Length: 150
Image (cartoon, rainbow, N blue to C red; front, side, top):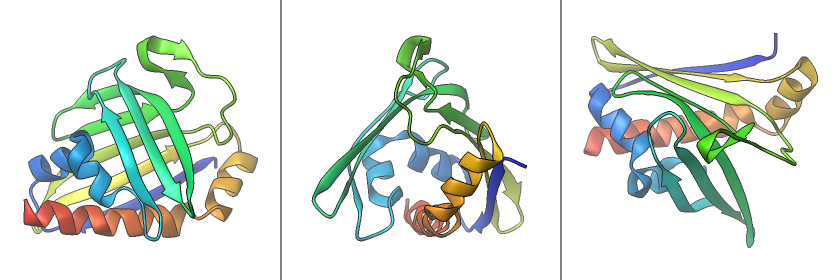
């Protein structure tokens, strides 16, 4: 299967987790595991809106650009780097994927579930080898801690 998944339980309400994903000032605090940092973020949480970040690692800036496919406040956010803002086709995408973030009520707060979909097994394997589970897992833990403080 060409999907990678991640699930966490956060001791924060869905609305706060949603804020962390859709407000740039919050996203920059948790989105990237140290020593990397997110130095810029633009999030327009509506279908066709831009999802853009710049991650700085070892002095190098790595921009990531894409489009929001779906935004259901407090429930689901889907974005891809295969399209750009306004539904323009992307070019030169090194690691093509579509991510869906699903938030559900949980007795302890929020169940957080991520699915990263890839065009084929080879790209999914490369994403995992690049550190999907560890990197997205660390970022998710940072997200949960931030959401609990809002």
